[in-house]
Length: 104
Figure 1 (spheres, one colour):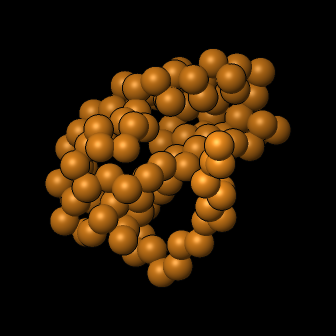
Figure 2: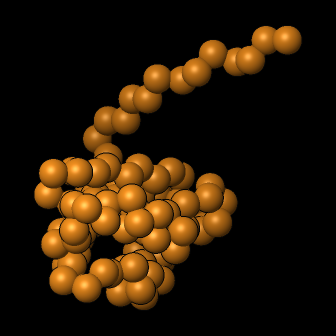
């Protein structure tokens, strides 16, 4: 599994909710929406206004295949005064607590 880590900095802390909603609305956040995408995580630093988005990909080829679209979307969601940095990583470990199945 591979990940793209995108950190958006320079956004206004006071406009965090609007900025976060804009990114959630434009970025492909639905599973199956983008081939090979396995998950997405949004992290916020409400003090600085920074937003970090971690997208998870089934393999390096899927990550690379999504790069052109990622560049286009990144430019679309940048707010005035905001910058974005990007890093690609191999996921060495991923553990997520699963909710128990609903009973009923």
